[in-house]
Length: 271
Image 1 (cartoon, rainbow, N blue to C red):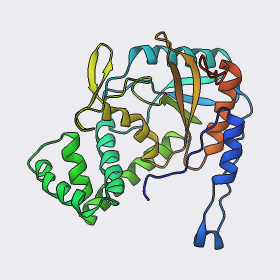
Image 2 (image 1 turned 60 degrees about the horizontal axis):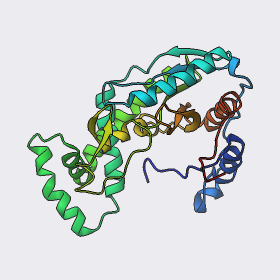
Image 3 (image 1 turned 120 degrees about the vertical axis):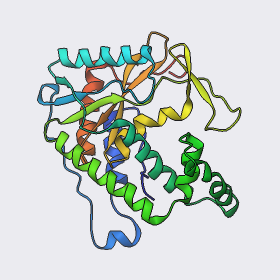
């Protein structure tokens, strides 16, 4: 399935690397003809990394309390010798986010039953009429032609080229994992209309998808490392994005972040 991966979860970078060794590689018939050999990280110290940092975007609203903690983490890494620069790939972020949502919902919608597909087919007329809301996009993505899907896929291939150029200059990109820390669950209405509190306002919960799509839409591995507690007492994590198939590079950096900033800390009652 497009934009789908078995991503292991662990409390330490070492355990994550071990889990990756078990999971990475072809299965079934594909395992007959080839194997996967992910490149090892060549860097051993923070001072050997040159990383780009992108902590905000104009596409969505990001929680300022969370961003403050991420900036604290970046400053600490720079003080420890990591070469840090603010930089982003030469990509239109608004168009990229729409491209990701189109491809994502085409993939997840492919497994829908006939009833759900029929409802999406009816709802897709809203997109044709100019509605650019999330639900209209989902309905259109689920029912678009294969020809249109390939057009979106070709755009993604162009984005992948931009990312490759970017990683010719930087080893990694550090960015948020989501638009906020953990938030109260809201099960009212539909997902397309649910909202979460951010910076004293109310934002669509689906905006949280931006940072996930920033990496995975272009098949880039991302490792999330804990970077301490925000001023509101909630934990924050920073996303470490690496070039295609350089999963071990992002995990190595997460290990170094863990050593420098303390790594995972059990919350009260879960020691």
